[in-house]
Length: 287
Image (cartoon, rainbow, N blue to C red; front, side, top):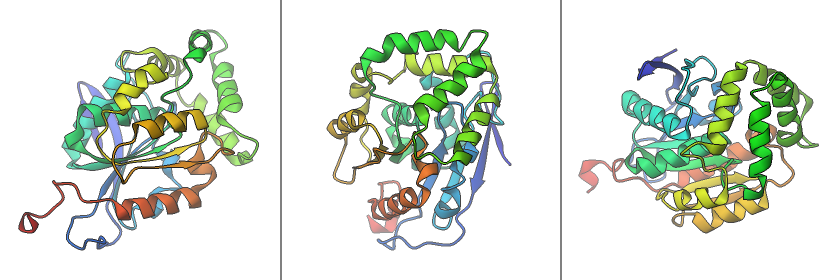
């Protein structure tokens, strides 16, 4: 499995080539490449329900963000902008340009910052229950939570957050158990730093006033799976282009792609197949 080093941080990623040569609808463009970006306290294996389907048609790369999974955990550098620049460097290193970003939760904010800063690297974005554009009225509660994640009961606080806010009545028991164990796989200080920066860091998109201007800077097609109507409405106001789409799952938990993998995969594959080619994908003889 490959590793990539940037500024002294060793990042893990797994690169699955396409299992077959898949002719696009246009019949003339190279196949798409996807980069899968997990969410807060997650890792690449969170996409196990998507990778087998995606790699039947597309090169599929899944990454562990810094401080997560098998990647290094430096003492600092957990702002969303740091994660976005890590991904920009990985995209260039692995020759993924232009890439389709498939992201979940905090990964959606990272992907959005990346698309706003480096539009030349991004072909499209598929986003699963983004954590951005939340209610500013939750700022005080999130600040208390950030403090508690640095306290003596940090493990229990993190697991309670997952149980109370990420799971829904329909969330299967095996996913509940997986998520609660996954939380404990991250050192408490990494959990605390990642959470505080995602909510309050310089590049944070957690609240609507900070998120909307950055969301509007995206110029690539967006497919967004939402469970919160208010956030879906903010997304709708900021969508670029005719190929963007919102799919709502109001009864799902936070891990929509794991709870409803067949539905998410079907929607995702249809959307990917219909994407227009980017300028960098059009062969020179076709111009």
